[in-house]
Length: 458
Image 1: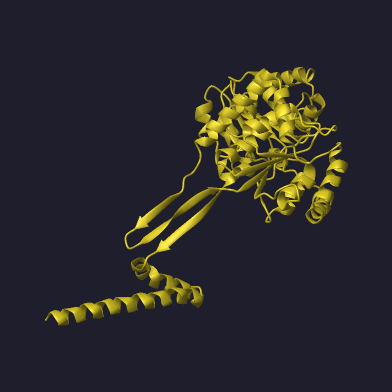
Image 2: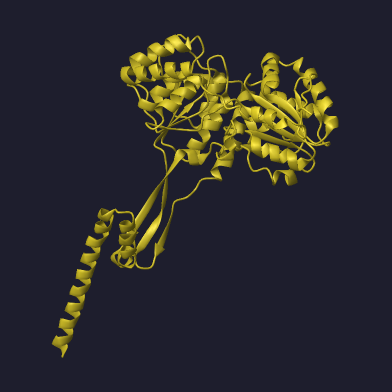
């Protein structure tokens, strides 16, 4: 029997125990966004142009590609202050509360430097230091993402990166929205530049007369931004490549159909390439969720986008039990994993591959997107198998520290020489042996001096 896909309802329905299911599920797994070759070609030209042309090339590209009446690249103190003043007081309060909670979460995760001292004069350890300068990219122009400012900027601020530089495209009139400026203020951003796309990535990576070069670039963007980040990697560090958003919901008979449908839609409305999947062991839940999806889409502002995402990268999977539901979730490795069950905590113990897990019926993904505290910059496209959310570690570097005094080198030096010989690297061994020879000479000299002193006493 072939894997059955429902022809009715917003989402296709698959039976996990039907033949052909693995083939269909494999297609759902293949959701990593592949940047078109054309995007990389364009991005390469832009990166090279900014790298070689500095401010003149950057401003020309910003005016042309961002499509705004740009006067100055950098936001002045006066413009920034005025924008914060213009921000609605209620919005300002909400942004401040979100920033406070995100900051509190990340403060608990700061690693410390450490060292171990061994007998004989051996010292080893790690020194943990912040990057000197970090760049955060925030999509903008027609869009509005103050939450991205907070989530990308605060981890850098918490570990006291010396300078946090933000790049975001301006509106057509050359201004930035007050909410974005306010978010930058509460996130601890130091400087803001009105620039977007591959040209902004290039400016942050290599610097211009006006824009300082940074050590790391983080933040999501379109195909051109993603391509540019890959091109500059190595000259500057980057975060993981951000793909379309995704949600994977495990729901049992205790789940509320309307809430499950709302969680699916909340991610689907982001992007036509978004993924929204429900897996359940309750057959009775399927039609009720389908009905709620159809009902809620009727009044959704971004219904067209959400419908396209649900039909293109969405599904409802009926599994025989919750263990299989979790197994499928681990294989999918979603950005957001929602467990809509009275037993969410117990079920989550087996969920090992997810960017973030939302437990229980009263924890929609939206609280994580904005105000819960943990970062909403999460691994996508299945990379949650080996990647983690953006955090303070992304803005820190660790330096190993080693110190050997003569007694410690005498204790371990011959082992180093032997291991170097095994690898055929005799120069390594010589660098140790020369020091050991001096240690032996010094030891012989001390022994000779003691013997001489003893003869004098006699």
